[in-house]
Image 1 (cartoon, one colour):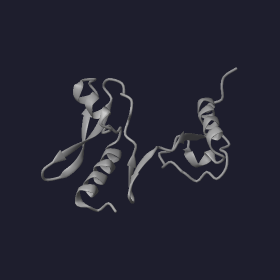
Image 2 (cartoon, rainbow, N blue to C red):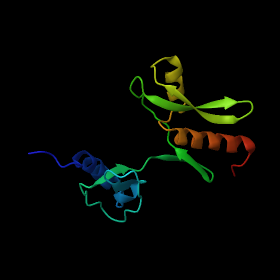
Image 3 (cartoon, rainbow, N blue to C red):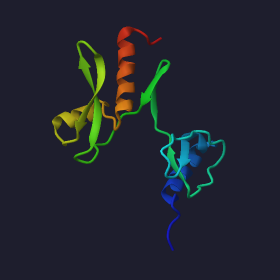
Length: 138
């Protein structure tokens, strides 16, 4: 007998259900095999349809009216492409692409909370830092 396609996710969902009476607010889904966006419109428990993909919503950090995805806290596998925040005299903060080499620079960036797996996430982080420096944060 094989496990349900979403068995591991169901366990995570059960953990959320033990913490809140509305665990679906932490989850999103999309139709399996499509390149569409993740949908965050669950208003009750998911039905765990095998034709859908499910995941916990990515955690975000909010600063004033701005937000960005929470950076990685654990090192990715060696060779993983990642994005971090750099500072330029002309551009301010911006996203820069690197490969995880498990060296001192990589480790320093992850300790500082500067590692993202997508350019969009890293750029959103950089945009918030730029807004802080401009004084746009209330």
